[in-house]
Amino acid sequence: MRTSIRVRQLLAGAATTGLLAGGAAVGLAGTASASPAPASVVSGTQHHATCQWHKGHWEKKWVKAHWEKKPVHHKTWHPGHYDHHGTWHKGYWEDNYSYTWVYVPAHWEHHWVKGHWDCRHR
Image 1 (spheres, one colour):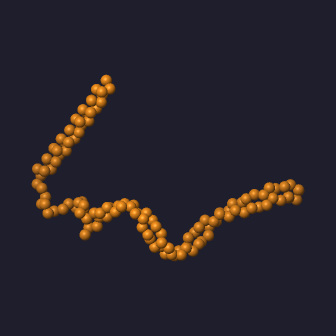
Image 2: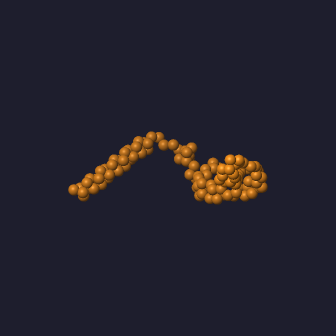
Image 3: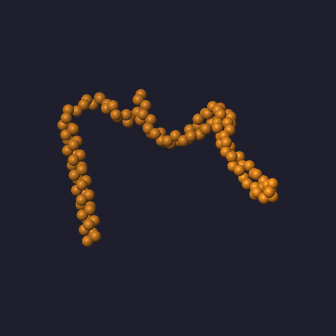
């Protein structure tokens, strides 16, 4: 029983492929019978001769000197103490966050450039 299902699926796939291929052939035959364009005319969408594939790569870029806003984390320890009633209060850390402006001198920076098609119309 299992083999017959596999055979049926194989035959159905082959029939579908045959129908698709036959439909494509009929479609191409219809366009071929239309008056063809002169061979010297190049379609506006075909630029395969001028396109080049550039693989992804690291690229160096010069960055001018500038100011950057950097986050600063301040941790302050408050020691324990006795209040005026004689009750002990434990010490604790207090977290404060702020920003400061830092001068960054000019430097080289590396950034990743994704792979892309370069189609220059020359």
